[in-house]
Image 1: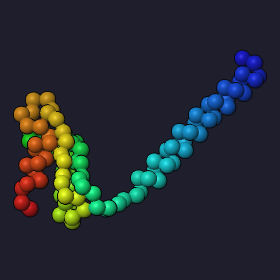
Image 2 (image 1 turned 60 degrees about the vertical axis):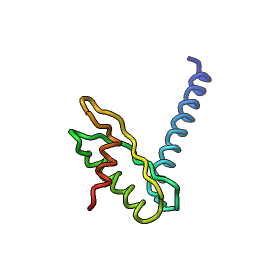
Image 3 (image 1 turned 30 degrees about the vertical axis):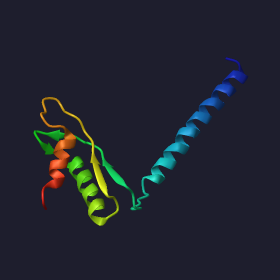
Image 4 (image 1 turned 120 degrees about the horizontal axis):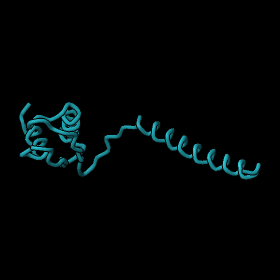
Length: 103
């Protein structure tokens, strides 16, 4: 490589690294934002179940959806999640059943 090719390559690498660093900072800063603006629906993403029991992460997602619903921030909750290996019920169905249990 000639000196100019090395400089061009170094410049391209520096630009790409700068782009990824900038995006990382933006994403990190956005992670601290929280909003409870009124919405139509909350979507609770599945996080796995085991023998019909929700995982701790999934449980907290469901509980937060219920919290937003009870507070009047949303009017509907959508649960997502498919069938795991050997499961007879989908994660979304198990989440719905968990959410309907009176506390």
